[in-house]
Image 1: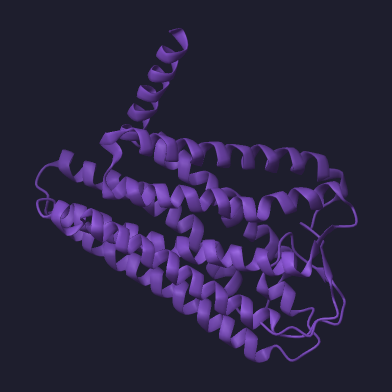
Image 2: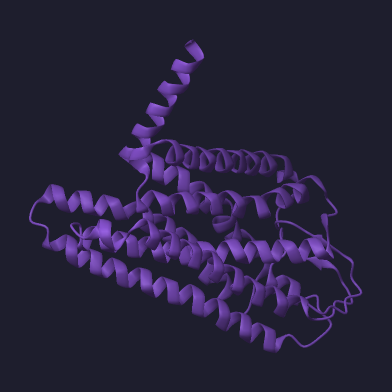
Length: 311
């Protein structure tokens, strides 16, 4: 990546809010971040140690938990630093490049993973007898690897397009993390081509994935309506409700920020909180509170720990 930048350090200004709220917001976001990391680590641990959860659905869920844990880690610590520093939080030029790459890498991988998970639910509901053979371990590994590689390529394009431009100052990023739209406002070159490419790039990925997810769930609903018993329909619906909840909370804010004309910095920062702070917390909350198998596995793990400590 060629860079002609004169800027060596950026300043993240953080959220747009009253300074009197710094301490309160710091406490809230710190608690949310801690719960996010611990919750997702717990899901990873439970899925790893419980043989009953070694299924395609939970294999993809473990990938999602791993992504959410790091997706939150990429942005929230810097946000917390902006809340304790009135002048904003400094971040080096290479650090900003790394943060933007990591953010889009994990975010786009999660986008692809949601699509794969909806396809998995489609096969589970529509082809229950053939599901095990259609979603074999090899197929799961191939789908997961494809999502990670696709996310890596997508992020590399975003990062290269953003940082190939010269930055001559100012160096204040009106956000709490390095993202392409606020960074492009600081470059001393024409960014119209970049904005179009980024719009198309993210639009193709986000809207393409969302279309495939909707298509999968239309097919799932069609299959559910064919189930004769109300208990069977309810069980099939429950397997998909958690995924739908998390998908909507992830895609709606992304579409609002990246795929609308114009940009309102204060509003963008507030909306970004939903998918950088709140959505990663939803994975452990939704998939444990609404999932009997995970709750049962957690209780089993708790009993094992208590038994080992009593010996």
